[in-house]
Image (cartoon, rainbow, N blue to C red; front, side, top):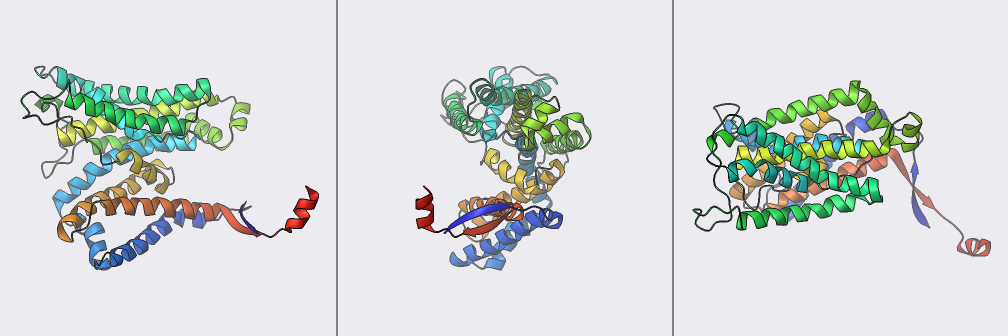
Length: 362
């Protein structure tokens, strides 16, 4: 006996729409069980995680801060995944974007001009795009698996960042802490409102999501992404180039990840340090799939995943739960999203075969 997955001839549109909601409900149920096993009140823990952060104005600003990089990275990854290019290294592109965009305020702290911030954003996008271009080059030139190359480049970027802030970029007046000088005022991303810390990265994220939704819905490039993602052969018949699509998708996702990186450093931190991300690049993969690879859906899923970060911080203080619990939430969510999608598109089939008959035929 063996288990096989048989593709369903027809996929229910209703279940396809409800799949993310079902995955979210299952995550909450198993999360409640996890809290119960930890000796905590499930209802109180879920309230702290998902309701309490929405009751204060300052926490809503923090939610926007954490959602911005998830949305920016997630919409870029959606284009990659819909075109069948599996960029897993957005975390590294995020890091390189932060480094590239920080060159001006770190090396030229005496420069005071309004143009420095736009240049930082452009340099951050260029850095992320160029770093994403490495797996694109390896795939188109040597047919290398982009999953492995993009993932391995994450750790190179993180080690490079650590070397920079502990070596040539370390602030000589920073009491030996591994960080750079604080950015000058002109290099800091301004806040959107006076009522909290939320900065313009959230606006960048919304604009990027709407622009890519428009591209996927109404432009020929979006049609090209969908066709090549579903069938490369059909795309070639239509005159589309799979090689050019690799470059387009990877560079676009890398640029948005780089923009998220420099926005995080400039808007939320104010300097470069060894740790600039709690794993936004990896969490954005969950965001992309939870949002059904739709840029507008990714906005909503980005807010949900940002809430797990914010709720995790609140839970540490109020009920004494480790910050690792939020990672468990995110992992459960990805697991149930993929499981629900698999069961929607495939049915589980038990195959019974006579071993002797198979051996005789062999």
